[in-house]
Image (cartoon, rainbow, N blue to C red):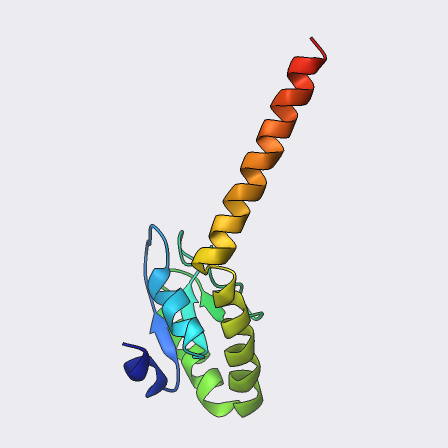
Length: 118
C-alpha cells in the first residue's frame, strides 16, 4: 500500500463523512500532500493550509481548484508533504497510547485530589 501511495503525486479524498480519516493518515505518512473535505473525520486529521488542503463538502469547483493549485505550486506541494508526515506521526500507535496514558494519569490525579479534599 505504501508503494502505491508513494507512486502518486497527491492524495484526494472528497468524502462527505468519515468516522476517522485513517486513509488520510496513511497517505500523509507516505509523504503525500492531501486534499480532502472539511467533513467530520477528515477535518480531525487535515488542518487546512497547514498540513493539507480542505474544501467544503460537495464543492466540486473548490475541489478542482485545490487540485489545480497543488499541481501548479511545487513549493506548496513540498511544504504540505513535509507537514503531512509530521502530522501523521501524531497518530502513531505510540503517540495515541501516550496521549491516553497522560489523560488517565490526569484523571486519576484529579480523582485522588478530589477524594483527599473530602
